[in-house]
Amino acid sequence: MCDAVEGLFLDDLELGALVAGAARARNSGIDAVFLADGPLGDAIVLTAGLAARTPDLRFGVRYALGPRPHRHPTILAREMTTLDHVSGGRALLAFLGPFTDATSEAIVLCREMWSMGIGVSEGPYFPAVGAINRPLPRTPGGPPVALDLTDGSVPADAHLRACDLVLVPLGGAPPDSLPPEVQVCWIQPCMAM
Image (cartoon, rainbow, N blue to C red; front, side):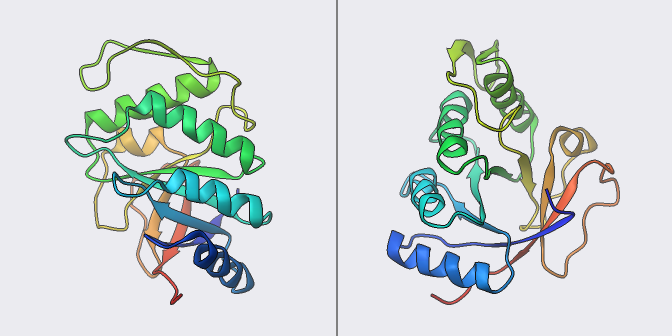
């Protein structure tokens, strides 16, 4: 990982436009492209298509748990494992705020699925009775996990210790309590397509 990574939001666009946008981002010195996932679009599939066509960028999925997530974290972990393989180990997963106990439970489940190949949780948010994830991700321990702070969310210290990266708006400041092992990913707004 770099000490600082610039990123790009590309939402609700078709793959050809995304590939062109990713190429422009790369030519502008940007290291990572993030797509927002949601029930109306599948950022993981689009990101896999981008990764196959752009071998020198990292690709992240921004995922909101919200009160009723459209994807259980064990399913998300499996799909991110596939993205990690397709991208050659260049996948990133960013959770959007607000950050709650459900976020912590989701991160623990994803990391279990990625490191042990099985996720078990009694809940209360995401019960799982031995969800299997095989093969394991290409990246040991799975894709880096980020907390997306671009909306101004302020995570608790426990959440910051559970992640590998924080996404901060370009020109913004990372949290004061950021542990030294957590890296900052500077994000700029979507480039014109």
